Image (cartoon, rainbow, N blue to C red; front, side, top):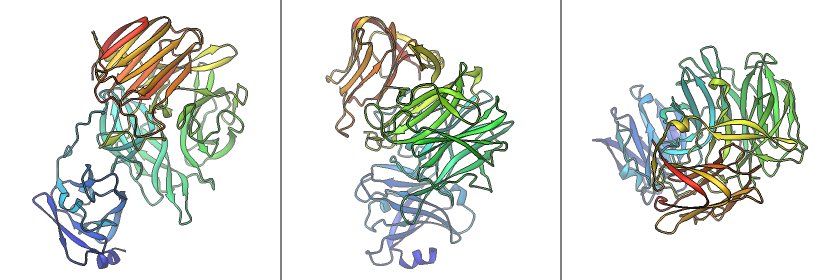
Length: 556
């Protein structure tokens, strides 16, 4: 393969003084090139242009292909840079970086740079959150494999390190001691012969962390083959070794992914729930490697407007909760998180509601792929969501990064009539970062509103951009209108009004504001609503009718 590429390549590029310079050696019509990096400098910085078609970037050592990624190399202009980490391959022989399907006249060849600066050309973006987890560079979607161990919260996530649009799925990794401030731990899992790294989960077995994930690879006939694989870590999840017996679970289904494994203390068995089309499948195991199919859940239950994804299954206050993320099919279009409450005997989940009853965990447009931390302390059920929507996730007006996670939330249960629902409250860690009272809203703040009957709250800036929130005491509904919130023209699906039932009277609201998001909760946890916003300047004006607001700065 390498000989074929070299025979038809268009460019040879040498790196001198940290800057790559292109030298044409064969006719311009060819669209392959070879780059020989320096022996010094860990990162080869790739110039990206988002509107450019994808080319392929390959790392080759001694004629053997090491990695291959799809990258939108800049052709006419450089939007931002991403890092190709070549340190693992340096000093191991002849190192080459091959680019395919990138025209020889592209601007990227004069802009390539090699150095050790991890913060090279980092953009200070207006919409980067101040207290929400987000990647420094690249694309992020579903949270994966979250677990707590020895005082540290571990968050993995679907990650594209080679651009801020979906693709090249890896597992990124971040850690935190307080659920608010996160440390980037780099890439935990990278694509291999079985495919790219789709969503999954982690469990802690004594001192070993075991990750179970979906490997997805395209077929020659279109579509993907998705299989479940294992990896294990003996250094608390910082590095993983993939199991030699992968894959451990396969099926013929088109959509067969997102395994959530957990130890069932009542049944004394490992359970696994994963998504297959529009149902959830449940398995048992005694060793995490051999899985026995037990049952399926989902037919005729809840919302089936799209593919079921990213499941979770856990017990709260004596009842079992089955989380089912769905896309599309959300109440206001696109992605959303539904759930079911019932009983689970280790083999079969039985829903206590009628089949047509649909319950939503959050009534905003930007709350998806919600899953919980394994092994959280104090028997808490702590969850994070991906704060975006597949209708426009690739188009939101950020540049070098895309997407953030919601603030951490704790789940519980409450009763309304004959139905049991899941309550959602901001995790107690959010109180620890509540700062001094403010007279006006700041770019990172919490607004606490004591509500007196019907209420209208308007959050705006000097340009007239605004978000209007209304509690209708008679209808017992809460709504958020972002149709004039700032930048909205990047997608027809973005401007909207979202409305939620409040399951009773609202006495107090907690509203969390960051650079590009608003998350609203009732103090009793009976309503949650998460929406992205992109004001061209921060909201600084607050008007409230029917309530009294107190504004707190959030320390970040």
